[in-house]
Length: 464
Ligand SMILES: Cc1ncc(COP(=O)(O)O)c(C=O)c1O
Image 1 (tube, rainbow, N blue to C red):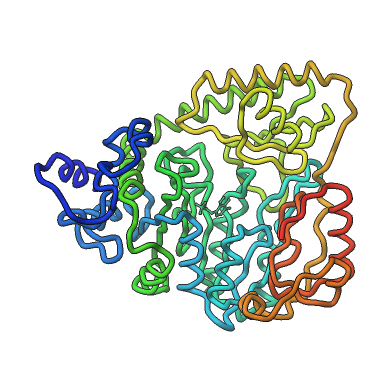
Image 2 (tube, rainbow, N blue to C red; image 1 turned 45 degrees about the vertical axis):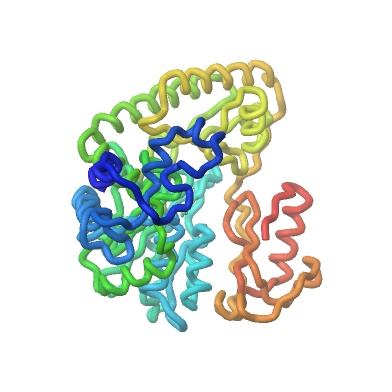
């Protein structure tokens, strides 16, 4: 695909087609000066020789086949609206009105949106929590088994590999159990597209035998933001249905910048992935050790977590706490951003999460280490602050309507107390623990109300 784009760009001639900026000639010069014309000239559309993502028969099809080969998939499909599009497509292809799908309670918001669009009925499975650290793990095999036994009519199971903390659950065993019971396995692998490229990284979903999985190539690999991939293999779901579902959630004018960046990232990883991730893993390991040498900070090691719901940690993810220095994750993230101009991937509860990729350089690691050392020195003797504990999960509310029914029902804004006994029309998630407390269709019980009231008073972060 990338070669076809290059070939098109070296051609003599002109065009009278979208995009309206006409290869950058019509764009405000301020942007042209900063971006350079080559980026803008590469912003192409479905022209002769450049294929069509909607019905790929040429270079896009070839690029998707190469992508599938690299990831042990039978087929892959490029996504220009992130893994969000892949998740919506999976649920539209496999779910449906009245169909039950097992979903981890700590799923991404796009899963809830997929339930609304598809009309599927969620059956929630709670992930385990590592009690000493409060870090969320995966769903244990026994929890999944119980959920499936209690809900024999479920058609599919949605899994997360890894979670935001880089934690992977017993994926292979989960897939085997689901397949044994005839369930389709869908995996949100938004944060795991790099797993294929090094044996020291956790097991990728396709290798574990999942049916369909979506990966954010842009998150941990090197393609442009919003570019993701959907893979499938050996699945009972008809390929045509998956492809049609994908077209329902994608633009008919996909960006060739995104598509070409996926093709190039795949080529880079196929040729140099092992070496690049070996370097990134070593860099992360050195930095982790150095951070753990700073008094007051602690960075999660693989050996620190045991128990159900845990099989592996993506060691390129640094989960750091400064709670012994009296800092919440958000406070630490704020200091890093405001004082040191270092931005983190996520802050939640007592933790910040950072990612190390082939793009992370020694200088970046040096800046972080220096900043943490300074913060530790400055805050020495502060009172310990622990925010993120395993007891923060409220009871699962009763599902009174499907998320789709709730979305289309009449709704109004009420105070939390007035909401008791009513049905939620939107998602409410409190951090910590960062899991939805309510999703559309669930009853607002007095316990949920008390839990949320407590959150507003103590942590003051409630979305919804
Ligand atoms: C676990 C998880 N799944 C899915 C998504 C959506 O991915 P994308 O941003 O590629 O649409 C995200 C995004 O942050 C995520 O964290």
